[in-house]
Image: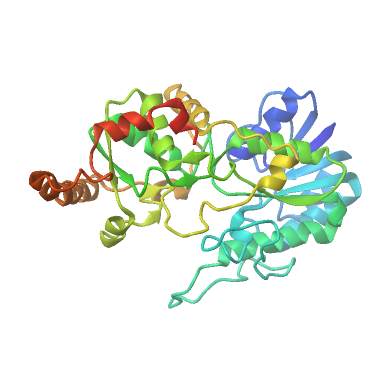
Length: 377
């Protein structure tokens, strides 16, 4: 099997290239050479996807059985369209890595592959969907760009030769966004750790290595299709996730669970200040049954957490990216909220009229979250 990876040097692209090499496939990686290096054994071709002459030169390096597009997150749909058209004559299939953001209903509604996509044409430029500065509604810019890029791949290759993968949150070794690394480093510091919402709340992050393997499976598949790519609904929880962080780091820290309404009242920015915390009904309600039926296998989240901590401890350094700085709550703000949680629980404890709140700093709750059964639910 001969594949072309658009990207191939960091996080998902590198994981795809490495997994393909591990299968004994021939791998070509096309990138600008500015962000890391492709795995040893990869044939690298340098170039810019926005330059016609570079795409023309790349096409002459083919043919390939499939192209896996992992580097279009900041590329205008019209550039995805141009690249797909240039590669279509020398490539059998196109696997496009999209996102659940492409759905109009995310993160407010539960999603399936039949959910409505955002409107955007396949030849949209980078300005399409930008909102005015005074806009106070949902920001669909990124989702529209990704939905348009999906249509670009389909326009060039046709539905039977395109697989569209729509992951939610991708975690694992090499992560550049900073969600899991922030939690690991915060937990490793110990002390009282502000934990968001309900520990039993279901979450659906997926391991980068599992996304890579599924992308390769789709590159070799006989038919096209669109797939949500997440962990199964209900298997993982926020409590299990943070307990896995405690276990991986060996931390003696204590999780202090604060209810959603308190965090909102205190102005905690969802999704970033306490990464992965979001109260919207559809944020972690993505049906990925089709992908699992097609062969997606998601390892337990605890394995992803442990592997990421091992990567960080071994000197792993992510590719520099501005999104890293968005994540994490300031220590002073965290302590102020922790103080409010303690204050809210002390009166009832002193009166003896009610049991301690399940959101309080409770050793029995933390201990129960450490059980293998609880961490995998």
